[in-house]
Length: 271
Image (cartoon, rainbow, N blue to C red):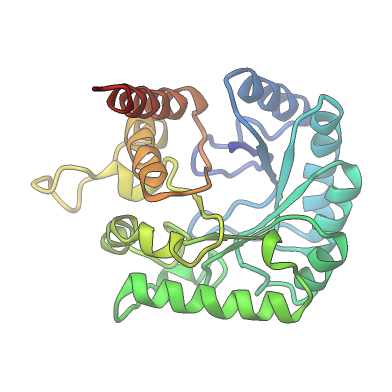
C-alpha cells in the first residue's frame, strides 16, 4: 500500500504532495514502482496535528481519488469521516482505511456495511492532539488485541460483513517506542485473530532511534532516512502473516520482500 498524503503538514514529506497535480503524479509513480494499492488521505494524523474541516478534507482528496481511479489504480481512502468515505467511494475508491476504526464517526460502520467494501479498523484511542496522553497499557499486545476485538464486535453489530474487516494494530498511535517494539514482536498474536492485518510503521518516529546506546534526548533521524528500517519492519510483518504494509517508499520494501521470497523459494527447492 503506497501512501499519498494530500496534506500540507505530513510528518513524512512536509506537504510535498499537497497540490492535486503533485499528488496524482506521485500516486502514478508509486504504481510504477510496484504499489498494489494507493492510500489517499487528506488529514494529517501526526501527533499534535489539527484537524481540517470536513469540506477541506473533501476538497483535498476527492479529485485525486477520481483521477487515480480513472488510471486504474486500486484506491484506499484514509479518512475518519463517513461523508468523506462515501464521496471517495463514489469517486472510485474501493477500500476505506479509518485510523479510528469507526470511533471518530458513528456513521462510519453503517456506511461501510451498506457499501459492502473492505474496511480497515485501526487500534485508536484519541485524536492527534491527545493521543500521546493515552499511551498507557498493562500489556500493550494484550490490550490492543482486546480493544480490536471490541471494535470488531461493534462493526459486526453495524452490519459490516466479517470478510470485509481488516485490522491494524496502530503503530505510533497512543504508543511510545517501547510499545511499538513490543507490538511488532507480538504481531503474530494480532494476526491470530483471524482477520487480514495491515501494518503501518513507515517512517514513524520510533524507527528514527535504533541505537540503544544513543542519547535518548537526541533528535531522531529525519523521516526520509527511515526507509531502510521501514523495509525491515515490513519484512517482519510479512513473516508474521500480515496482509499488507503501508509504506511511503515502495521500492525498498518491495526489494526486502523479494529477498524473503527468493530465500524461501531456494529453501523449498533444496533436496
